[in-house]
View (cartoon, rainbow, N blue to C red):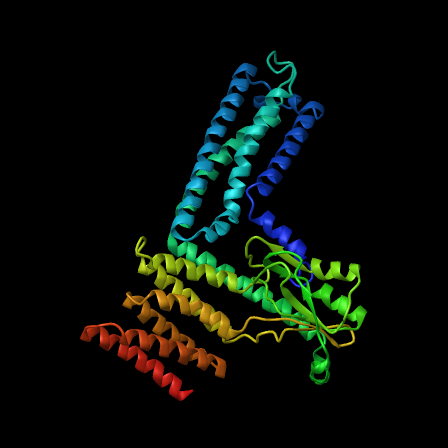
Length: 449
């Protein structure tokens, strides 16, 4: 069952921590491996498989050679584990220096790395259990052939997995792969967040017009401020809990912060028409806001946009000087903004079961997300004409799909800023011709709008 972003903020936060950790998946694989090893040992002890002729080769091997083989495999696996950890650390270091420290999250979230670490550690523990838990192993009183066959199968699988892991890391360290992974996360996050918020708002769509009138009439009601109890980044807000609380108290709550905002102690984060809250109600208010030391994509659609922008800015820095990566980021951001032109943004209101508005909250807008995608890259690309030209081409693609005055306003603003920055540069005739031709195409699209 899919978790609801709106209703299970704390559960999603725990899930996000688990998903981006290097301990959960390896521990889970290790637990399953230990359970499998014990099960196979019991089968070897009580199933009587050693009497079957077609399994003769498993149960009549040389015990000392088999024991040496298992100890050799265990020692070799630990060497492979150290190599795997070294490769992982190198990948994280490279990601931090080239793409930005916030991109480490994406590498830690990679399930392939977690599975590889888990399999090799589990293989080592499997061999140790197999050697240590067999009392009369050396004198051939008991030879767990099926369990030993499991160790050999895991070893062969581990070799293939190591080859895959090296290939996978080689692909993931390429800038195009990193950019595409962030873009896919951006698309998923925006789609999920928009869907959840629209579902919450559409539950009472039939009474929205009536409630809007009631909301306007209640605008003159005095509002009382509610302050934050701690500092940190807002990772998630449980709007369902707040709606239930306001419904029970017959009040209205106006949230003035967004997921992704940084709040400090005693900062006003919401206002309500209820003058006083009980201690229990205050606790519900505070627990509905999940704060943390960093931003996460749980309810923050700007998070992945900032990641792509950060990659582009680092690529444009003198130390890296990689305009091709910056251009790739612009292409992905352009695609994301084009998709945003086809979305209906949430209005930021939740309703109770009777269709009465209970919570009003801030939502992101097309202008905000689009400006985040273009502004900083435009400001940092004053000395890179290729990046500026690609931004103009991106605006042309967006203008071809724009269908709202907000879209045209954003395009007009960005066009004006790019033109101003180009005027400050001394361009040769060929470069002027290139920029002029693209700006003319964009200008015609704006005129037709």
